[in-house]
Each structure stands twice: as C-alpha cells, then as structure tokens.
Image 1 (cartoon, rainbow, N blue to C red):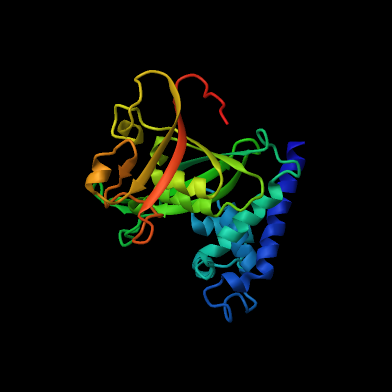
Image 2 (tube, rainbow, N blue to C red):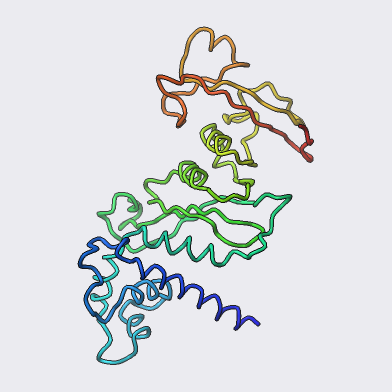
Length: 293
C-alpha cells in the first residue's frame, strides 16, 4: 500500500515537472538560449535532480543520478544549468504539485479550510557576500534562510510558502502576501501564534474576507490588548477601534475610539487620502468563545 502511494506520488511529481518543462522558456533567465541545445542535463533533469538531492556531496549526487559512467556530467555543468532557472519556476512547480495532491473531496471544518502559518530557520551554505542571509556571529558567521509556510491542517498539504533571508526576516509581511494571494473559492480560517499579532495582518485578512484565529499577547504586556480596558480574567468581547497615524488632541483624548499608530508601525491601508481605518475583531481569554451573530 505504502509502496503504491509513494510510486503514484513520484509519478505525479514527474508529471508536474514535465508540465513545467513544456513551458520552461517562461522560467529561464535567457529564454531564447537556455535549455535549447541538446545537453547532458535537460531542464527536466535539472529540476528533478534538485528535488531528489540527498545528503552526499554534489559530485557524488551527480554520479548517483546520472550513472557512474564517464558520460555523466560534471558537478560544475549541473550548477551552470541550475542557475539558468528563475525562482518563479520552482514556485510554479510547487503550486502545480500541491494542486495535484489535494484530494478531490477536500476536508473542511464546517465548510472552512484550516490554514496554519508558521516559520522555520534553515542553514544554507556559507556566503559572506549575501547580505540577506549572512549572520555575523562567531568566528566565521553563517548563512540562514527563513521559510514561511501555510499548512492545511485537515488535508495535510502545504498550500503556500515564502522564503526570506534571515537578515531580512518579516514573518507578518510574508503572511500578508500569502493571504492576498489566496484565491481558492473555499473560505479559510487562518491560524497563527503571537508573532503574527498585528493590526496590519488583521486588516489584510478582513479585507480578503477570511476568518482568523491569532494568539495575542496578554493584556499586561505591550501588545494590542494592552490599550483596551479588559478584565484580568476570562472575557469574550468584540473590540472596535479606528486606526490612524494622526496625533490630534481629539485622538489623544479618545483612546476608546482611536488607536494612533507610530510612524514605524507597518500598516498598508493608511495614506494622505485615507487617514482613518475602522477595524472590528473579537477577542477572548480562557474557555470557549461564545458564538454571537
């Protein structure tokens, strides 16, 4: 049973790579020349080899994949071919593969997909010239990327991801991008931890028409809830406020109506024309939230 599943999964991936190969000119740095000549490493091989790469050195991986013969390409030849592929090609392959793997009968919770967002750090090969990933720590330093992923909890599939350099890490911005790009007809409930607490994140989700559950910092901290008169016990209430970057006397004297954002606070929906943004969300602490219309 497991062998059949893995065989079918590998065949699905191979079909997706073939689909990408049929339009590979859209994802090459030089469409008129890249992968147009008959070489040992085709576009299909370059993609498949990258995915099947394990833990050996590159020369040994090349020999394993292409056969231990004198006709096998060199490691440098593979690197040259790999560098011709744009990152958008890998993004296309990811979404194509995920769409093929999602079951026909999607599992939902009362009609909603449950999408959890989180991130993980991954070490990569050292390159001190890469300003986005190089961390100046220790004697030599190291390079690291951060993978922001959106995971479907009920269907056990990833539905989107964004890779950022650890030095340029911005998890909330990554979530906003994935929310804005969510175009599936099935509505979703987005779930995230305290690191994603932000009026900007709330607003992206609300404007997209999606539900969300995001853990907030305690009322005694410097988080969003600290600006509201809430009991230090269980509560279940709607919070409504008007966001603005203005600092007039009226705004300062009415903290129950307005929330004044600092200049360095990210918020994408305020400008010289739209100076106010009203937001309403439900907040609860302890127990199970009460269902209200």
